[in-house]
Image 1 (cartoon, rainbow, N blue to C red):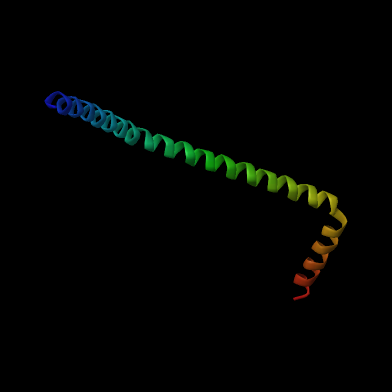
Image 2: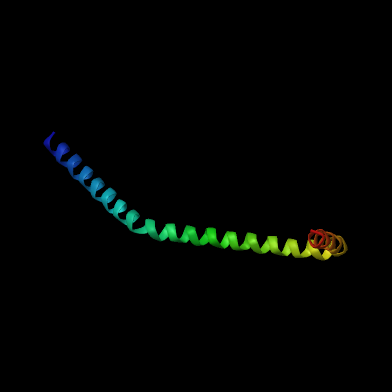
Length: 81
């Protein structure tokens, strides 16, 4: 019985050390992972903005005449004030 208790104490001690070491490594890695996630978010935002700019340029080119008429109407309205 004493041998079993000593064995369990040794196994639980090893498990405790492994858990403590894993926690230590996780706390060291957490800031690095956080920075990588921020960089990924920034990249996704930049790609989204780029796609929206391209869509806006294509829309302006496709509807050039309508945009020109609208711009003229707006500028005439402002100049008429």
